[in-house]
Amino acid sequence: MKIRFIEPGNQPYRKSLKNYFVYDKYIRTPSNGMITLATILKREYEDVFCYSESISEIVWDDVLDSDIIFISIFTFNANRGYELAEYIKKKSKALVVFGGLHATLNYNETIRYCDYVLRGEGDELILQFTNAVRDNAAIDFPGVVYKKNGEIITMGEPEIPDNIDTIPDRNLLYKFREVTKYNTIWPQVHASRSCPHNCDYCALVAAFGRKVRTRPPESVADDIEAAIEFFSGHKRLAKVLWITDDNFFADREWAKSVLNEIIDRGIKYSFTIQIRYEVGFDDEMLELLKKAGFDELSMGIEFLEDESFEKYNKKSTYEEILRSVKNIQSHGMRTRGLFIVGADNHTKGIGERLADFVIKNNICGVLIQSMYFIPGTPVYDSHKDKLIDTADWSRNTGRVVHYPQNMTAAELQREIIIASGKIYSFKRLLQAIFRKRGLERILFIGEYFWQKGIRRELKKELSYLEQLGR
View 1 (spheres, rainbow, N blue to C red):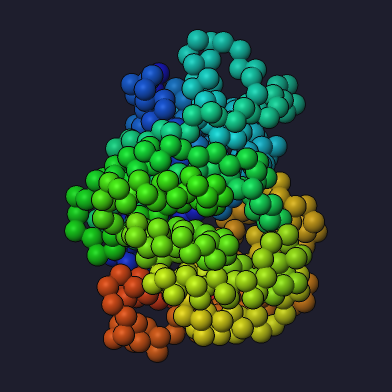
View 2 (tube, rainbow, N blue to C red):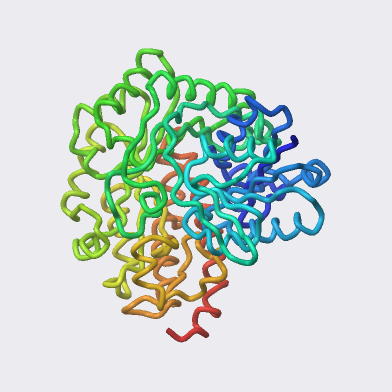
């Protein structure tokens, strides 16, 4: 059989000089998950290949005569995925199958655009499904959703895969090696899955549960070496590998063993990773991170108020966040901040407060998102009546998507603009150019132009949000 995978882009890729230094304008790092599933099928099927609109156009002459086309979607690119599926249905006889986080949590919507939805993690399910199609066997096992006589049939919760050790064959993705020349595309490795915590806005737990599963440290290190080698064909200014786990440190002893494996192998590279604040109190872990090559840690700070932490079931406090940031910095590592604005208790001025916190505490960079509402999460269920548009998921890229409690939607969007503008001001750009060194300087310059583009897009939407009047 001929099998193709597609990852839609929120906006499809196009060639641009901006791709060299501005992330997520016309280019972004493709998903490891899709390539991993393609690698699993490639062991049994010869003709397997992937396309990602994050890095290239889709070669339709190659895709449309496939037997099965798998489309993987998150919430932000779901609408584009539906658009591609409708095009395929008109032009091809292929089975169209959706998977991914959004399809898992919102399968009642997604099934309207395809033949099947595969829910959950597909490491075992995708081979079971593909073999059933090949053998013309019944597709009636857990994890599958389909339509019969207009009725949606769901076969129940999928099995959690036992083996998650697959090292993705990055050569299976069209033009991936070619775009590794861009500093905006980073090598990625995913070492563990899920998170034991239960924040109300987190789609990860809603989709995959709270049981943390890990790969053997040797497998993780092999994957890291493979990713570094794959990106070694071009001269790059920003040599950083991102370990993309949502909670790498949930199993402390395992995390230490992975870091020690990196150190023992003598892997010389810069790494970044997402953390919860608790890691900032673990001096042994911080020393290992620094020794292994982690120069920067991205902390899910989210809020600056204890009231917000409590409201959304985020187990942390402002004082703990502050102490954690300071201790990480004392170990010689930078701290990046991931923030959410638009909590029910937020008022005008939150943007200024956020920017002041970042500058005062020497946070090296930020990702600012308006409160997001992914179907299947507690915060989605509690705020359904406050959502601006439940049909257009493409706005779920950090922009305002709901009517906040204490200000209008337009006012909240302005708060994001204010925070970004103050953190990434021209004055701070000059300071970065003349005072920062190496990768830290390169990253700030790239983020300055990235954030400038984000603010431009946010400003374009203000008139639309003002017309909503809430």
